[in-house]
Image (cartoon, rainbow, N blue to C red):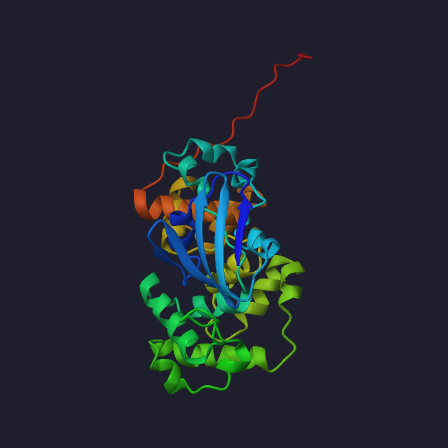
Length: 292
């Protein structure tokens, strides 16, 4: 199946697919290949359109556009954060898109992320898919296994795929979700603190993993995951030397409802470009007494 889809605003596949938000995409010449649900997709950009060739089930134009957030010009997220426009190197990063991923695969991937780099995480995720995922017709790759499937495997088997100390945590989380009563859609709509609390109640899920799941898997752009790079970036932007992660998250609310997207830009900018300049405090226009 082939789809050619219009893109609103810039789309940089290199930034989008290698920035650490998704772990099953690999470069294929000028294109990228990855697994979306039960399809393997080869994607490339031609002008203002995204070309997608899919093996396995047809994901459909609407779902592909939603996955890549093609209907949304990323610049919209600067409407509430004009102060970031002046950061050196930030504007060229607007082609980075936040993908709308499957929440379970996102959660499982970030449980694997503890004390691991992108290559390690990708190896764990791909290994679990190869061992227990549903085959994709016309592709050597497989879909990522659901929580009900992983709930039935052993800790030893998970360790064989590189999970190490993360194996019992992912296994316990899969079993908790597979047991029933878990509603992803409720977390999409719930107040952010309630959604975060539900996720951090799962084994091995701290605030950062919870926020990454909310941001990348549940389309919650009102989250601001704080890791070491974002901690450094936010402290520098705020002109502070020390602060708790919760304080940094609260400070970030000045960036508006799209701060989760902006967080990913700041993550990339700080990780690849070094320290950021402090933002100036918004100036308050003084009005002389008696002025109209």
